Image (cartoon, rainbow, N blue to C red; front, side, top):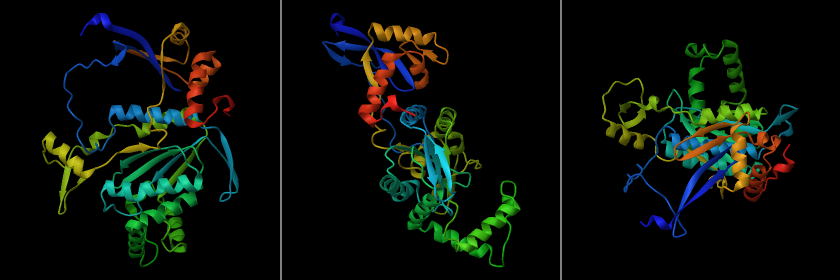
Length: 361
């Protein structure tokens, strides 16, 4: 390579939650990328049962974009007869009975249809989902949206969809068998589920014919600045330690069991993880899946903004040998006079999401 034809261009990528400053390299006016090694090992096919650090960073970026385009909203809930105030909504979808299908089947058959239905019925355009294993090894799904869905309607939709694979029917059979002689308490659940609440759930189950299990949890979020950090931490937590061992059953390696003490090689664990958890472990709507952010050359005005950001309260700066990352709150930029940066971010939000930050509530 003739280094006389190499041009170094100070560049930055600007997003609602952070700005990354780095050097771009042009060789004969064409962008090039330096790599530490000539060859890269290809990624292993199939998904990990936990979120990698790289995926965690992507989820964080998507959530921050969702937060940036979410206004405070107030809707009258016909079910509770009260006004509900919210910015974003955090939903958890669980299975009504023991999981007997693969994670891939649940995603393709249940979650996919659920996302299609709420997109059409409630105009949900932007969402982020994440799947996770419960302690009982059942899969459940976390969903972040910026629309309000009445919880009874959401539960009815999810129960109807999951019963495509028979989960509500099996729940009904289990409950009828357990309570065949009348109300019967579950002692192992008393720590987190009181006698009074179990009795109340029993009476509700009798009234509905055990056809409407409480398989959904929904939270409307108003304090968006605090809860966004919580949701990011929750959805990106690294729980690989739960998947350190594989339990063998009659049908093969279908569950991952932390309590097991069977010694397995790293390659065997990798292979069995692929069998146990095929497919993606998180995803988002098509618009959020794009490579978001505005990439610009650093001119004098942006360079002055970077220097000002370093001394601004509420802004954290991480300096690496090859790049610097400035993390901030978009409202802080707006209130602290970073006019150029706010204009760049607002222009992207308007072009990509049709959201005008100037009229944000």
